[in-house]
Length: 81
Image: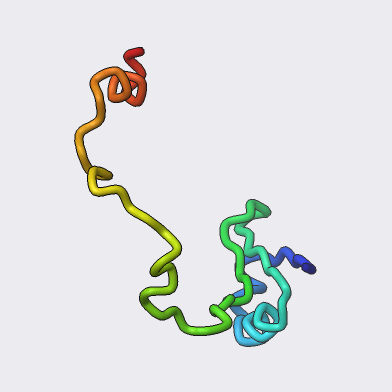
């Protein structure tokens, strides 16, 4: 992916063109006083809309998945072990 670096004043004067270039796949970095501050990138949309229940029958959740952890495991998570 091609990347272009522009100063903020340049970007302000040609924002519409920059958005078109980004939509076409180009990444544009906007800098202020030579320091990169932001990136204009193409918006990626999902290929198809999400629908609920896609994992139904493929994932099993244990009955006790939200039960309290044993003390030794909790200590390990908290860095006490």
